[in-house]
Amino acid sequence: MKVFRKLVRGGLLAGIVGLLAIFGFVTFNKPIGSSTPVQIVDIPPGTAFTQVVHLLQEKGLLGPEWFFQALGRVQQVDRKIIPGEYELHAGMRPTELLAKLVAGDVYQHSVTIPEGYNVVQIADILDQKGLADKGQILRLNRDSAFIASLNIKASTLEGYLFPDTYRFARYTPPEFIVRTFVNRFHEMVTPELLAQAESMGMTLQEVLTLASVVEKETGLASERPLVSGVFHNRLRQNIPLQSDPTVIYALEYFDGNIRKADLSVNSPYNTYRVRGLPPGPIANPGLAAIQAALYPTPSDFVYFVSRNDGSHKFSATLAEHNKAVDQYQRRPRSKQPS
Image 1: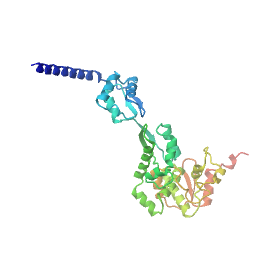
Image 2: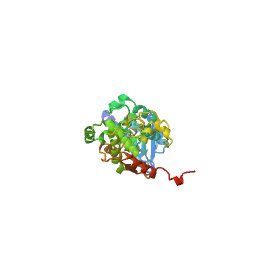
Image 3: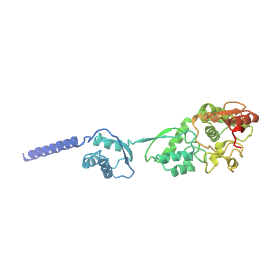
């Protein structure tokens, strides 16, 4: 009989404890505010669980800290918080907050890499966004082992960082970011495009080099195949490309104005002095420029000059070209200073 009474008392006590636990859970597992405003909460790598709890409480997202700490320990996830930035609000229950932190449902930053940007410019974008250190990106750009792991046969990554819009979380390793750019490149440069390059007797590096020059020479999609045709004609006739963007790429400092002295700079990228393609891409071309390099418009044109409105005048002879230069680039004598 005494044993039975002990069992009853024990059962009642366990039941009471259970009811209290349920009551406490229901009481404290409630939002403490509304779903607005949403906050971006940054949890850096190495942040202890107690620090996370304190940070959430400081942000006005939690009630009693002890409840969230207990919740994490009971679920055995107090050491499984994924670092990063999170979109959180006071309308979330503690269990919801904890689940989001454990799942690593972090905030993603949108990053757009414009067509024709070079590696330095891309590194600047990532650095300004706080997603990667510029120096780390430039180091990876010349890391031969890393480049080889990306299935690229080149000395740098210039030309292979595909222009597009991407989304990355804070604290994403720079290697992952760069690999994402290159994986996109491999997706966009299809077997058909590679086969076209082979049929033209061009390596992928040569295609990207020409595409990068085409990309920098004109912003008009309709002109890219024409510009490409001019450069193909020049290469075929062993005429120097004489492309200003390649010269600019070789300069240590460029203030926006190319000068006569710049055209004499001693560099393999100076296509006024060196015949043929430069040794590698001068930027990261988009798909349209790559297609233009592979499918140039057939013509007799070997010259083009800017009309100063974004378009170009194409010419087949030097006489035609000089006439176009006089028309679009040189000021009329009546307007020249005396």
